[in-house]
Image (cartoon, rainbow, N blue to C red; front, side, top):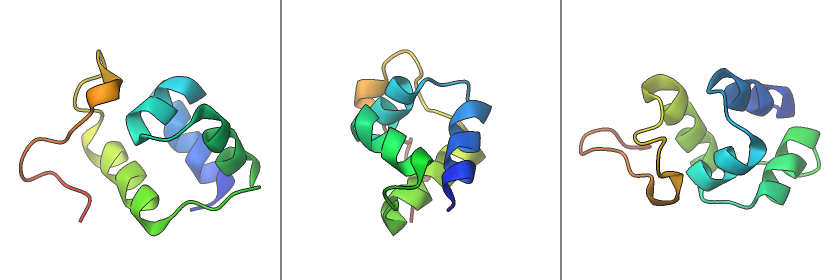
Length: 75
């Protein structure tokens, strides 16, 4: 997934870098590195981003405890 695609994914969900980082379980600085092209996402992170794009965020009110419901995973 390219840096531009990662940024587009976040933008399509209407999230700040901080809220996106919270949803992904990573730091905001790492989101900035991913979007800036100075870091590469792991395959697991790419799957999580793709799952969020397909299904949306499960609970946008509390992103620190984001979990997909049973049957909607990243595998």
